[in-house]
Image: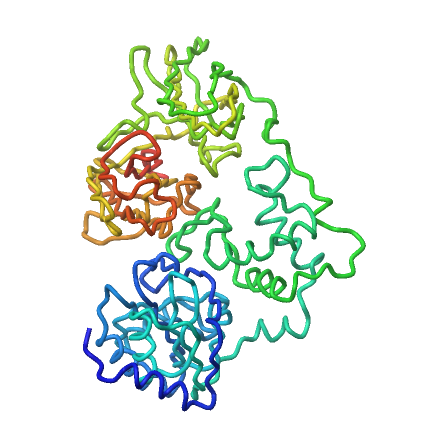
Amino acid sequence: MRSFSLLKTLFIASTCALSSSLMALPERAGDFALLDTDGTFHQLSRYRHLEAVVLMSYDANCAAMDGAVQKMQALDAQWDDDKVVFAFINSSQDQDLENLRASKAVAALAQPLLIDDGQLVSETLQFSTAGEVTVLDPQRLNLLYRGPAEATVAAVLEAELAGEVNDTVTVQTSGCELTYPARTEHLVTTPDYATEVAPIVAEQCASCHREGGIGPFAMDSHLMLQGWSPMIREVLLTKRMPPTQVDPYIGHFDNARYISEADMQTLVHWIDAGAPRGAAAVDPLAELSFPDRREWQMGEPDYIIKAPKHEIPATGVLDYINVDVELPFDEDKWVKGVQYIAGDESVLHHLLTYVTAPLEVAEGEAAQGSVANRFLEGYAPGKVDAMMFPEDTGVYIPKGHKLSMQFHYTTNGRATVDETLLGLYMYDEPPAHENFTRSVSGMFRIPPYERDHKAKAQYIFDEDVVVTGLRAHMHFRGRDMKFTVEYPDGSTEDLLSVPAYSYAWQPTYQLSEPAFLPAGTKAHVTGAFDNSEHNPANPDPSKELTFGLQSWDEMFIGYWTYHAADSSD
């Protein structure tokens, strides 16, 4: 970092001389998260290893933007990256990815350009003009400065590094005015709870956030929604909920919980208005009803397997439990759908089921390298509904084969018993395709306190295949994972990106358009771990990590669900 002469004097003099300055307790910025134009996930609270985050509002259509960018980049050149990070946030109404990538290239932005879908983060930070700068404290989630990219920014940063900033400095900024049409509309007419807000909650949230559901609280009335509204706003702006995980600009998946910009704006602006009840006599959320998760969602299965009872103690660490289930079938069978009904969802962390030969031992998640198997299905966080295989595709159970089930339990302070049911739905006639799942994993060794440890694995398909589903699997240190194919002609394509991996949500994402991979295609799985103390899920940052079965160990596995291609594909 360059030395600034008389910075403290400049800081005091400049803040005292500014007629538009507001000296008060630091404004609360709150946490937020955005993707940038390269698909990288940025969350303010995950920058707690830095002293400050400097953001400049960006609008490619502003004539004064070039000058503001040059000042921002000059500031960036003065500071070490291990202390302060600089980025641009697109605060305009145009959030089209290709347009932003093009404008970023034209402007030669070396710093990330964040995509502010719905302009909600720009609103929260109160950007009023393009080229306006905020200095944020990622540890306290406070706003230290708002104004133009001038010498005062350097003074504030110097004072922050010295631990001498306790107020927010505000300086009037001139430039191209930013407009927020949705906010303006909602300030005139607050979104109506019954007709606008409740339908979004019913579609996006209430199936999990209900009495007896897997969500931590129920969204079954206006009163509950209003009481939890600050938390709801936070998880929306940090992209924790809905738990989509996927980069929406890469591929499309039938079972990803996408939420539109308009719905986000409706929810956040309604919360900002105080979450009013409105005039409707009937509360729509109180009228919702849901199928019982302990009922068969697709009707009575053709065959029901009752797993052995497992007694789970109140505390302690349990090894994986492997169970073989003999099947009574006197002929080959084809499975078209499955459903698990967990005996006790609170302790059953996951359950994997494989079709195995009489003397075969299924390794499950213990398998390393690249392994293809007849994976029937699994129960895991976020994957609790009945599942149908793609049309005319099924899992083959040869006569005389069995099921191998691998249970992983976590104790929760209460002794209980789990007796899980598995329902199988069968084809009457064999389908055209046999469903396989291949695990692609790599070796790794994660040093203690490593914030960005890269990992990768690959596999080459030796036949034409059609990929229908993808699933990322890591544990608490998992940060991101991407699935990429490299075709025989050397071209590449990203199929799935999970830029903000969560161990609590691991569905198999079903491709809306299955991907045909010709023989010789390389399947690449790349990602990173965060073993630092700033990872809020990390149980022990001082631990060196390699492959291990327990949650506090680590794994790096990309699951590819596919079938062999034929002339119709």
